[in-house]
Image 1 (tube, rainbow, N blue to C red):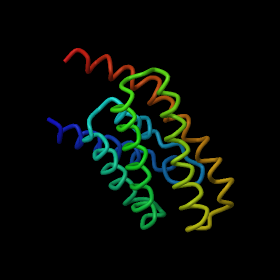
Image 2: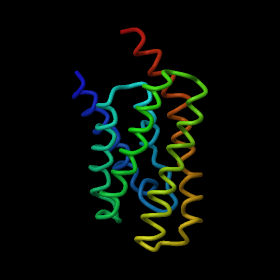
Image 3: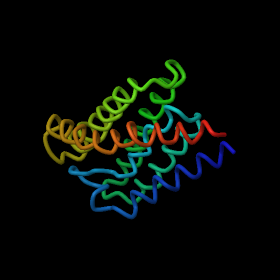
Image 4: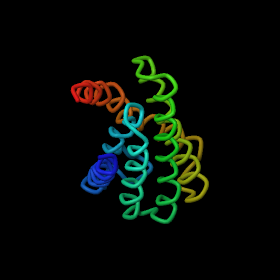
Length: 159
């Protein structure tokens, strides 16, 4: 059952990015798939692997593909792993949902905004790109944290 969770998350993440490429790949982006990103907070380690695999698949089609595959996948793996660890250390706490939203968004801003787009691809000022991508990531990360996490938590409680 655990591998099915990873496969479903990977496929869903990749599909959401690939069907919305115009808003998924760019300095100005809102990855709708990032709504799924906070799930490792309440799910098992397989969700970390599923999200990282989904990111790897989706970023194979990125215009920044060699860098986006490596850095984007590492970015997702990093924040998903942190979310999973926070869930194991603190258990489910509503106040943690805001922390997860901010932590995930800051990691996206650092890895994708500053490092990849700012320093490696030289697509703009690293600080501005960090701030831009951090801010943009707050939207899907917040939806994932404050709406999806409680909904999935209630659903999982039934089983």
